[in-house]
Length: 204
Image 1 (tube, rainbow, N blue to C red):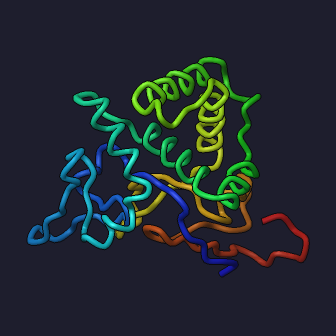
Image 2: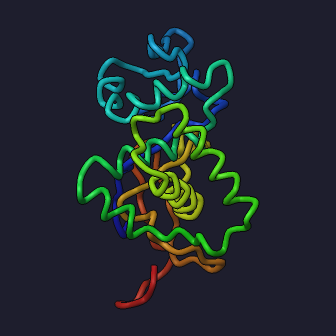
């Protein structure tokens, strides 16, 4: 094992919101065990009160967004972009982390960037108190590009894809058609495993 990494922010896939905890990302597998949902937005589910408390700093604004968009859904990428914005503004180290992520902004098509712009406008109209000027809308578009580029799939108990998010180290690893390592893990924890000997100075 090269390293073990922890999730910084993530969002459960739209289709699994009622089946997976939105903090630990573990799915409901026992029919005798019921998930509890947020009493305000009635959309986000948790496996325990502890997980709900731990997620509140991220879910607080998301909760308002979901209610503002109802009955239309708040899609995974929209919720993830908002969570990234909240995370980035939480402290200086979080902003540094986000600023260091690759965005590939220039490589994405105009159509894709227009889609990210429409998403940013939806968030701004729903949560105007988060934005003081137009430049912050572009900031959210850039965040969406960074998520598109660096988001890692979050895996459930049977290694199925249950959502996506950013990890503190593995989100910086470049894609390769001939990888020398592989990601594995569940929920909020991810491990980077070497597939072969890696020499000092060799890119992972």
